Image (cartoon, rainbow, N blue to C red; front, side, top):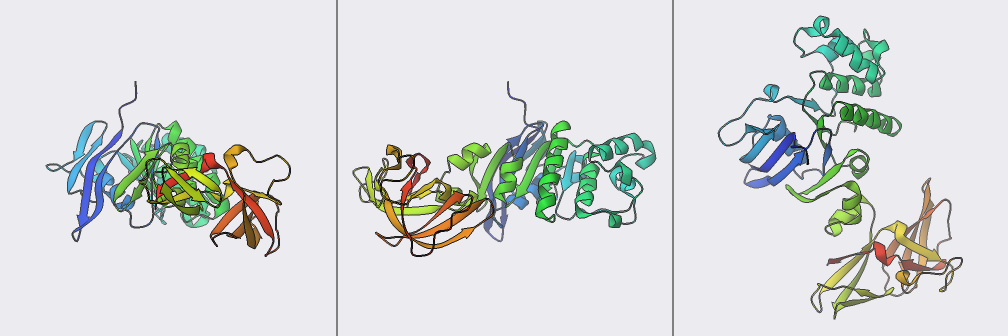
Length: 358
């Protein structure tokens, strides 16, 4: 039997200047679950977070914590009484307090009464040797871990995180995210994370809620939402995409790569066949070299190399298709840098294509 959500957002809406900033958002977060609100700037994800925290109030809908209403049309419990922890881009550590005193801040009885809890948390973030240090003596990653320990010290039922890792450099970010996730899971904290970075959402979330213009347009596990995007914009939010355009006639669409089945689209409707660069195959001749193209790859089409760049783990090759001038990108593991003007043949992995109305 599924656990009762620790956090429930029920049909929450918020308007500013006559515009729906949050429009009918509903979701639940269970103990130990990380749910990510993902979307571009201005899509309403941070406003949703502020409503959950209690620093803003919805126009309609409800917020529930452990099944109890903390905000609706008739009541509004203040932030400090909701049992919710907060982590933001700004670590907001008190410069005049030691690391230990920062972690103990807000606990009844202060550091003296809660020293064992403070020491335990600092051990778990590998900072117990910095008990008596001050924030200015720490690196950005160390300050982030102190902020995490402070947020967890009161044992909040729910943790709200708004772009908390954006101020860290790339090498630190992955390590701090992994440490943070492990600690939150240990504490069985329900986490609502806001980010505009798909990689961060994929790395941390058990569930992603993709937001656009104040609404959740798709929800699901990272694997599902990546491999079954609801529309072209959803596919494009997670990676570069290629678009092959055509007209559906009799549930078939003719393209340079052969015919595609396009059931469900009206006769004469414009459609877009979307595929990610890693699912394009490059060959030196039409028949292919090495393993033969499978039937699922369909017809090969010739493209002319426009440019090729080595990206570290892979090479990115951009083509102008000979038949219709469409620009397509393909990625190849390791080093592959054909000269501009080189003609090559491309095939699509049809099982990795998505068909959407234009």
